[in-house]
Image 1: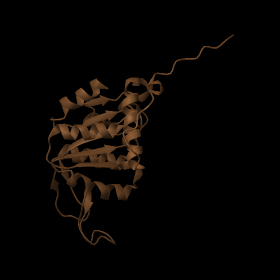
Image 2 (image 1 turned 90 degrees about the vertical axis):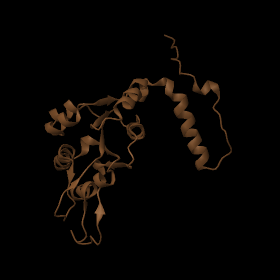
Image 3 (image 1 turned 120 degrees about the vertical axis):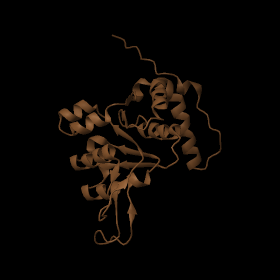
Image 4 (image 1 turned 60 degrees about the horizontal axis):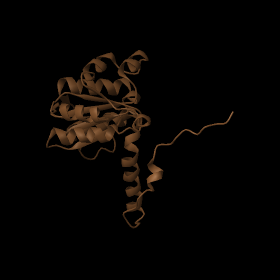
Length: 209
C-alpha cells in the first residue's frame, strides 16, 4: 500500500489519465482524492459512478445540457467534465460503463473537448481524469466489456491497490477510523479504545485428531 501511495504521489502532478485497479472497498475513491490534492490543481474534485446511471442520464451527467435541450430542461446544466475544469474527474466502476459512454470518455480525453446536449459549439477541457476498475484492463477487453482504444489510452499509468486481506497492518488504523466515525455519528463520548487483544492477528486453532 505504501508503494501504491508513493506512486500516486509521483504521478499526481502529471496531466495524463491514471487508472486505479483493485477490489471493491480497497480505497480507490480515497486514493483518487489523494491524487487530486497532491496535484495542486485549483479546480474541484468531481466523481461519477457510471454503473448507477442509464445511457441518457450518463451522457447528461458527463456533458451537461443547454436550456430547452429536452422536455424539462429549463436551465443550462454543466456536466461533470465541465465542473472538473482545472480539477480532477474521477470515473468509477469502469467495467459497468457502456461502450457509448466509454467512447464519450475516450473522445473527451483525446480531444479535450466536450459538447453539452443541445449546444452548437464545443467546450475546451482541462481536467485530470482518474478512472477505477475492479478488474485488469486486459481481462475487460478480452470479455468485450472495454473498448480496446480506451484501454490503450488509459493504460499508461496504472496503480494496483492490494486487497484488504493482504494488509493486516492496516486493521488497527481502519478499525479506529470506523470506530471514531460511529462514535461521532451516535454522539458518544470519546475517545473510545479497543482492548489491545482485540487488535492482535487471529491465530489458527489447533485441532486434535
